[in-house]
Image 1 (tube, one colour):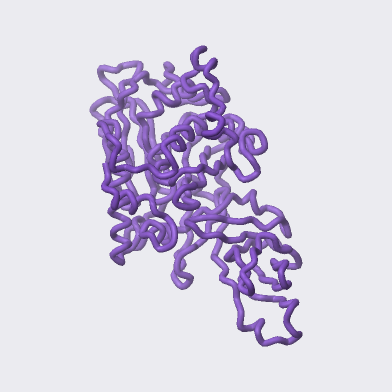
Image 2 (image 1 turned 180 degrees about the horizontal axis):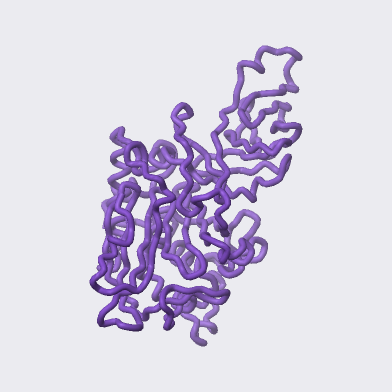
Length: 420
């Protein structure tokens, strides 16, 4: 368990909180490219780390992101006119381009010197791996963009679902790095089978193990940590282990062990202290599902399972539309879709878990490591240090990979992964 002071360090992600400062030292995935795909399209309100921005694609297809409020009288630019290579505020007609330059002031006299003196803050952006990434840190200290491990190439096949969740970022991350829960919570979708390694089809995922109580081991890295969940396999249990090795890449994502068709990752970005943008990703090669297939497989289809703001239609108020008859008929949770099952757990904890009272067991070793690592990292930033995974600690993220498979017990899982 954590003290209340440690829990606050872990979960506070707005304003000048140390964790917010830490995150702003990384390129941040702020929205999906599909949300701002149209030139001169509807401006997008972007909410991240307690702040609000506006993203838009101009007439020439260039992408820009500014502070949400117009520098003039602070009206929202989200409602502005996106036209003629700029975003025009409805209030007085001030217009900004993607670089923040004020290119029109309808309310001011022609030739007014004010235009050359005013500039909206524009944030550096990069489109990569289905996301728009923004640099929210110091404007004079922008590092080169490093492609994430789940999109090592610009053309990496990728499918992303997005859900806006009313819960703090940390409890969602803890769920994603927790291998033990999958044998219970997801048992109707992650099925034991006599397969050689993890497999997947359009109906379910399959694993070569019935073991619900894995042995956990962790190893700290410069970018976060990796850990192994060690289970007894269905075949050759006396001589072999089934290994599932997960990578946590601070502060935004985890690489979940792959299956025979594609790799899996989760990207978790705080909106504020009690809301989070959760992204569940399939990626890899030609066997990667399309975005539409991926969202349907996970029952996270916009317009059907989600509203226009990416919020799930399954909520606490409607008991997550849980089907108790399906549970009696053999479905473990009564809720379809792996992310939807997780969301019940995350949201039912409350918007911000008080970790000073929870009770951890042997299967929670990765949770203990996550909390220790990130609390220590936040303290370091609060004391003026650099953020985890930056500066001299930075490694090429494309070199990081999760892993799974059945191996002889003589094999040390640490030899299967890097240890930067």
